[in-house]
Amino acid sequence: TVQTTIAASNVQVTVKTTSAPSSASAVISSSVGSVYRYLDIKTVNVEPSTVSKATFKFKVERSWFTANEIDQTTVNLNRLVSNNWVKLATGIVGGDDKYVFYEAESPGFSVFAITGEKIKPGATTTTVPIPTTTAKPTTTIATTTTMPTAGAGIIVVVIVIIVLIAAYFYM
Image (cartoon, rainbow, N blue to C red; front, side):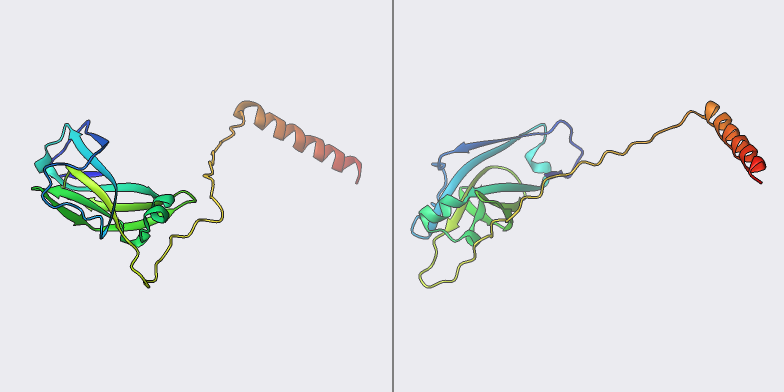
């Protein structure tokens, strides 16, 4: 989701996986954690200065946490600003058997890094539970049946006459 300070139409956002930018002066240390992915996110038909907020939804494979000994609760989206990494507020929004889903907000676009910190020895970690059932979307189709009005009145009158005649003969 992209919010701008002025009206914008036909906005396009492109996301490309990229390598670590060579211009970044602040290197993300592998001793603290690990980089899951670098992303280059750009827009078309909107001036960067008019973007007030962008909300990103992304997912991280569960196997990455295990292979790199990463705590799922420490994942962050980091934005490259003036050759420095800025950690953005990031939260867990769900998960399935293969991924953990996250959401983060940014005041703009640039190069981003999805990172996570190593599990600290002796620390208690939280694992996003895998849902036991998957809710399938349901579709409700509303239908309206319209009876023809011209013949319906005659049918009702005929039924009433038949009932009256039957009642007369049985009394």
